[in-house]
Image 1 (cartoon, rainbow, N blue to C red):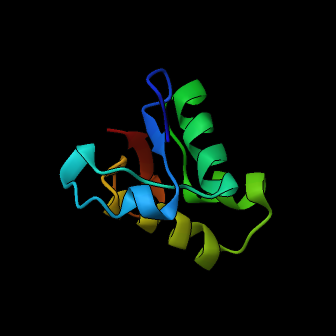
Image 2 (image 1 turned 135 degrees about the vertical axis):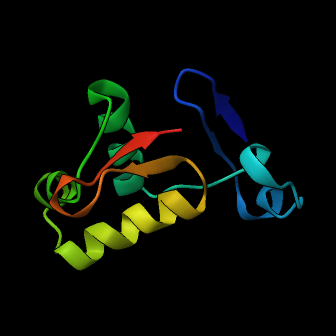
Length: 90
Protein backbone atom coordinates (compact mmCIF):
# COMPACT_ATOMS: atom_id res chain seq x y z
CA UNK A 1 0.00 0.00 0.00
CA UNK A 2 1.19 3.55 -0.64
CA UNK A 3 -0.10 7.01 0.10
CA UNK A 4 0.52 9.95 -2.15
CA UNK A 5 -0.34 13.01 -0.05
CA UNK A 6 -0.04 15.43 -2.97
CA UNK A 7 -2.63 13.40 -4.88
CA UNK A 8 -4.89 12.57 -1.88
CA UNK A 9 -5.26 9.00 -3.19
CA UNK A 10 -4.59 5.77 -1.34
CA UNK A 11 -3.98 2.66 -3.39
CA UNK A 12 -3.94 -0.85 -1.98
CA UNK A 13 -4.27 -4.46 -2.91
CA UNK A 14 -7.52 -6.39 -2.26
CA UNK A 15 -6.43 -7.75 1.12
CA UNK A 16 -5.36 -4.32 2.42
CA UNK A 17 -8.63 -2.74 1.21
CA UNK A 18 -10.69 -5.15 3.28
CA UNK A 19 -9.64 -3.59 6.60
CA UNK A 20 -13.07 -2.02 7.12
CA UNK A 21 -12.17 1.67 7.40
CA UNK A 22 -14.97 4.17 6.73
CA UNK A 23 -15.35 7.69 5.31
CA UNK A 24 -12.51 9.70 3.81
CA UNK A 25 -9.98 7.46 5.54
CA UNK A 26 -11.22 4.43 3.59
CA UNK A 27 -8.53 2.99 1.33
CA UNK A 28 -9.58 3.05 -2.32
CA UNK A 29 -8.27 1.56 -5.50
CA UNK A 30 -8.93 3.53 -8.68
CA UNK A 31 -8.48 2.32 -12.25
CA UNK A 32 -6.21 4.21 -14.66
CA UNK A 33 -9.07 6.19 -16.20
CA UNK A 34 -10.33 7.32 -12.79
CA UNK A 35 -6.79 8.31 -11.83
CA UNK A 36 -6.55 10.35 -15.05
CA UNK A 37 -9.79 12.12 -14.12
CA UNK A 38 -8.43 12.93 -10.65
CA UNK A 39 -5.21 14.24 -12.18
CA UNK A 40 -7.21 16.46 -14.56
CA UNK A 41 -9.20 17.88 -11.62
CA UNK A 42 -6.02 18.58 -9.63
CA UNK A 43 -4.52 20.40 -12.62
CA UNK A 44 -7.64 22.26 -13.82
CA UNK A 45 -9.71 22.51 -10.65
CA UNK A 46 -12.78 20.87 -12.19
CA UNK A 47 -14.08 18.46 -14.81
CA UNK A 48 -17.32 18.00 -16.75
CA UNK A 49 -18.93 14.88 -18.14
CA UNK A 50 -18.14 16.13 -21.65
CA UNK A 51 -14.45 16.53 -20.77
CA UNK A 52 -14.38 12.97 -19.42
CA UNK A 53 -15.99 11.71 -22.64
CA UNK A 54 -13.43 13.47 -24.85
CA UNK A 55 -10.39 12.82 -22.66
CA UNK A 56 -11.07 9.09 -22.20
CA UNK A 57 -12.89 8.53 -25.52
CA UNK A 58 -15.92 6.97 -23.80
CA UNK A 59 -19.69 7.35 -24.10
CA UNK A 60 -21.73 9.69 -21.90
CA UNK A 61 -23.01 6.68 -19.93
CA UNK A 62 -19.50 5.42 -19.23
CA UNK A 63 -18.29 8.92 -18.27
CA UNK A 64 -21.19 9.24 -15.84
CA UNK A 65 -20.42 5.78 -14.42
CA UNK A 66 -16.86 6.89 -13.61
CA UNK A 67 -18.11 10.17 -12.11
CA UNK A 68 -20.73 8.35 -10.04
CA UNK A 69 -18.07 6.02 -8.63
CA UNK A 70 -15.87 8.95 -7.59
CA UNK A 71 -18.93 10.65 -6.05
CA UNK A 72 -19.84 7.51 -4.10
CA UNK A 73 -16.27 7.27 -2.79
CA UNK A 74 -16.62 10.91 -1.67
CA UNK A 75 -13.51 11.90 -3.61
CA UNK A 76 -15.35 14.54 -5.66
CA UNK A 77 -18.47 16.65 -5.40
CA UNK A 78 -20.99 17.81 -7.99
CA UNK A 79 -21.66 21.51 -8.48
CA UNK A 80 -24.16 23.23 -10.76
CA UNK A 81 -27.20 21.79 -12.48
CA UNK A 82 -28.08 20.47 -15.93
CA UNK A 83 -25.68 21.57 -18.66
CA UNK A 84 -23.78 23.65 -16.07
CA UNK A 85 -22.87 20.60 -13.95
CA UNK A 86 -19.20 20.14 -13.13
CA UNK A 87 -17.20 18.18 -10.57
CA UNK A 88 -14.44 19.23 -8.17
CA UNK A 89 -12.18 17.44 -5.71
CA UNK A 90 -13.40 17.33 -2.10
